[in-house]
Length: 567
Image 1 (cartoon, rainbow, N blue to C red):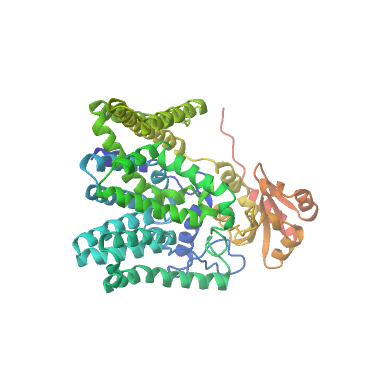
Image 2 (image 1 turned 90 degrees about the vertical axis):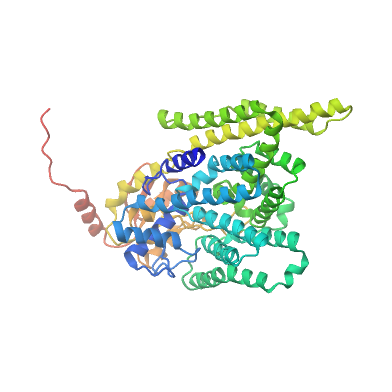
């Protein structure tokens, strides 16, 4: 109950923030919020989600099944359009996820190991990061863990109840995020491990697979039709994610994946705990957790062009459940040998981690970990573990080496909790988009209501020349306008004149994007009227009568005189 109380408190921090400059993932969150707002304003047909960067079309877009956006819109219909309401849904799913995970951990692990696994999950910065974010990851994680739990119960008991639950929760996970499909590798491995090749002749296995996959297959076929018809996609068909031969020649993919796993999942020494669990463990939970982690890693490798990028760290939340199980196993075995001192050390480390978070809330500045201390700690623990794993010689020498290894694991577990505290504290009160948001609010009066705009987008290709999704939704959402995105490489006067012929009236340009093309800002100022500018944005009028535009600007900026209060 204490762990659940801590979990609810940590996940409720920043819960009531609106969709302003305090977003962590501005592209993803603003898209989900925009789809919700468009359901609310333009119709509640869940099969036709609409985005804001729709150009001159209706905005129907290819995306995962928009259950989250639709549910948010339903809250808007009931209570009014209050953006903070949307975060309640992923928050509730995150709390439910903890309960389902605890049930799974109790079934696979011993009592203390399940609590240690739950503690790791409770303090996971990634799990906390997505817990109140307007993203489908929280919903996906709930159904993903529920599917694993139900599938294992069905394998063990053969009950129809667990059979239908396994099929239903897997289908919901795939609808929430298609990358949940990696769980099929775990299910296949568990089925073959426990029932052998004969299981492939069992009709119930194939029916379960069909029931799990069919809803998602139908939805994504429909969503792909929306892409082919309207050419709008939230990164499914308009970006290349997949592995190529360069995976084996370019180390950036492996380095990127490992870096994210170490810094955002394993914290970063938790791998010592799961390595200890694999080497020493002979429990049921070990094989399940290892197979689960391997299935997740296979997914990361297959989609390495995305999962190796630091902006995509939230994709790695799929690692947290198997990581927590392995962590709980390794920590329990090491603490069992270390005794009361090991338990006391972990409690102290966890309490210190929470104090770091509370200090961040009280003082308002994120803590830092000096690079030298972090490097020395990692190096020292790695050397200790290496010495422990290579114990040779007399029985007494091997015993000392084992004890050294156990202490190294206990130390790594404690340091993982401490690192979690620092990482959580650093994520609190996000503000990196604050300047762009405030600047958007400043220029909003410069654009007449209902006019289509062009907004700066991202790059249209990665360093290998493969396509990227360029659509940045946040300026559309914050300005309350629809319109076009333009890729950085495609910025030109001719391209903007072409968009103006399709109805675009203003170009809301981010200064950083303008600067990426030499001479483009000067060219824009020479061809189009500059109607507003501030430290982050420049707004150019692309079409229409200039005198009419300036009359609008003067009327928008005028206000009745205000009598000055006496001093």
